[in-house]
Image 1: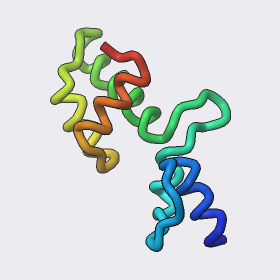
Image 2 (image 1 turned 180 degrees about the horizontal axis):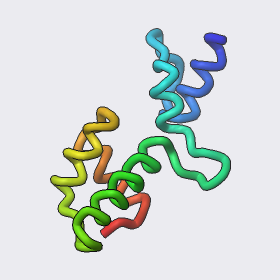
Image 3 (image 1 turned 45 degrees about the vertical axis):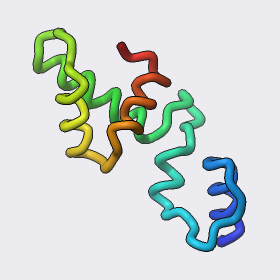
Length: 91
C-alpha cells in the first residue's frame, strides 16, 4: 500500500520519494478522471461556476466570487484556482 502511495505521489508531483506520503484525498484531487480527464478540483470549480452563473442569470462570475464559493466545497489556494481556470479555458 505504501509503495502505491509513493508511486502516485511521484507520478502526480514529479518528485521522488517523500517521508510523509500524501493523504488519499490529495491524491484523488490531482488524478484526472478516466471518463473526461477532469480532476476533482476542476469538476468542483465547473459545478460552482455553473451554479453561480445560473443565480446571476447567465452573467459573468467574478473570480473573487467564484473563489469564495469554491472554498465552501474544498480548501484551495488562489493560485490553484487560477491554474484550474486556465487549464479549463475559462475566461
